[in-house]
Image (cartoon, rainbow, N blue to C red; front, side, top):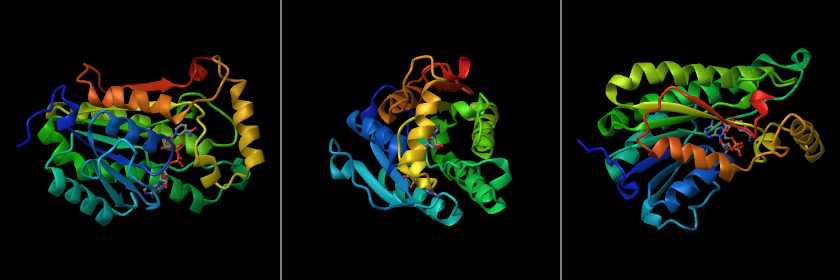
Length: 253
Ligand SMILES: NC(=O)c1ccc[n+]([C@@H]2O[C@H](COP(=O)([O-])OP(=O)(O)OC[C@H]3O[C@@H](n4cnc5c(N)ncnc54)[C@H](O)[C@@H]3O)[C@@H](O)[C@H]2O)c1
């Protein structure tokens, strides 16, 4: 059984989903820079290892988090390669925008399949390895789960579900020594808006509009979200079940 890696990141192994882009990519990059071995999962296979990583410290796997078989195979491949999983970052996610009148059941089902069921399947698959290391999970919720906004109600609901799962799993998994927290980012410039079908102009309007709701007056960068994911994930802090808003103050405004 692997021993807890304590404070030496170089002994640790992290699984990062959604690692091809945005917050997941920045998180994989930061973990790799700290010497953590990173098993990077994404449905989009067109991504490369962070420049700071030696190839043998980076495992790139094509995984659709909606598919239990692919997820189980990826968890097994990670354990075969490195024998442990100390940290799981569930960053794979989709955004959905549009008024209630226009939303389709299929789009909502797919959103929940990735954001809620995918997060569940990946966490389940990594659970035995996380328990063996007394490891940590960091989920990605969102400011919109904590504060109402217009035109993305189902996305907000999916991220509120992630916040609820985070609190419940923290309670359920504490006896196994697994800490479960979430970061709730505010609006952050990544590919998620383009992936949701928004053109440049609609993205600009959405993000500029949101800027007015952010006390610190600007949108976020993936790197500043990644910093807190890594902090919550790698520290042995006495913290579990928390949803930490990293949002320039948007949720308290
Ligand atoms: N960008 C923001 O403003 C923001 C705000 C709050 C929360 N978040 C959350 O942060 C997380 C990361 O988002 P991002 O902004 O970096 O988005 P992004 O689109 O840049 O990255 C998301 C990644 O997830 C991958 N992905 C999508 N579906 C997948 C699937 N079925 N299986 C495996 N991988 C899949 C995509 O290929 C992509 O590489 C998401 O959960 C998102 O909801 C983002």
